[in-house]
Image 1 (cartoon, helix red, strand yellow):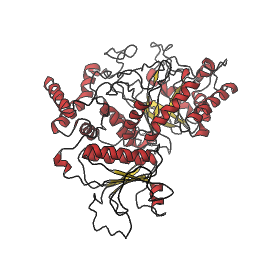
Image 2 (tube, rainbow, N blue to C red):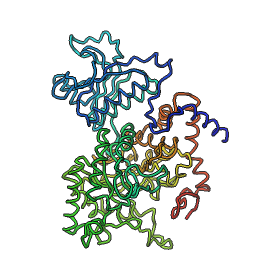
Image 3 (tube, rainbow, N blue to C red):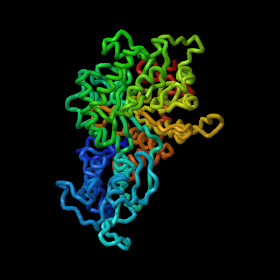
Image 4 (cartoon, rainbow, N blue to C red):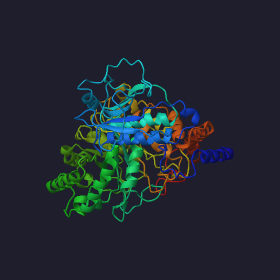
Length: 585
């Protein structure tokens, strides 16, 4: 084992240049070696179908330019075609090439249709956020294409169902180039689920619950950091590169002060920084805010004054952040307030917020992590924490509004090193659900230990719950929404990046964030292939580096389980205190 770590140190030192600090993570765009550069034949023009400076398509053009410059040392010009006037250059774009010259074309299906005079492109069906990537026509040496006079000779097409999709396709193309892959491909890629979010457990004072990489990039001194936008934009870029489309920026144990006028204005700045990357901002709420912040004498979800208070707050938020993703709510768990205080149901509580955000197109992620930590009596066998989520939710399946998504931890306990699938996924047939994973290593070594998590996640995602005796695989059937015909479904992961340059505290921990996005997009993806892609993008193409990190990472979860959950005691790792060492309850 000592030899492996020595080899790893040498490999990591070789792979990362001395001037790098890890902040670019897998988006380094390191220059390829000369032997691979000789194989490159990439168009020198980037044609962006659209010229809105804050749009993901506009961002995609700049990212293509940056990535190609880094990987190939080639300076590409950018030409913008406005949606209403095909072929027209935007200002300050450089010279570009004529219409018959090869180009990397990036845009949406609708924009490409308009650019082609109303002719629909011949590409497969794309779902929301999906993209089409076609590199078959080859760089600047297009020959024998049979194009008529004056038509554009296509060399690379990156076409999204929407603007986010075009950006995701751009990152997929750049990932190929950065790994020295210049093969001809033509494929459509659609995400498995519509919700692919991350949750930050950042506190308003700048600390982060279960954060191991320094202070919050969002908050400090009970307010939004005044200089947060640059770092926030860099984070949004990382999230977009793996297909994440939403973020909840504050802790589920929420501080109502986030709803102050000054902080709402600060949220608008955060949203502005993330919008060009297609990442929508949401927030966690404290259920008792009408009383603790608003001065009401109640927070009963059925009280008319409480309903009006939340509607006013929601309208104010959307006036500052028109595309806000919605709310995340933790209620009646671990001492947090909630509707049970007033003998209301959890559905009553969730629907209160759902109806407030519905006119704005928002959704409510309502956590299923509900149990009474103060009155849990271990001598009573019915006080079963592992069964609490099912006990609280299974009778409410028909009671939730259609924009409520119940966010369920992957197992019935609490992010342990090995758990069975939460049975609640099988009980919610009429209610949208999302799985909650954890990238921050709360019970898994707190980023002091290397633990590559996708093998753990795959035991959950690949499990067949056999609901009503029929195939019900968690990843492809339940979370995709296909099993029960739900449009809303998907993924949320607790990430907790901080101000540390490496984002999560160590370079190797970032493999989990990368892999989360890839598995949320496609839960059937191979965890080893994901890891090797990440390694090449992060540390370079040296085979010894890739093999060493692959071996270390794939051995890490079983190793951690063996020394913290040995003898079959895989749960309750010091669950009531620091969540670190082995301490079965």
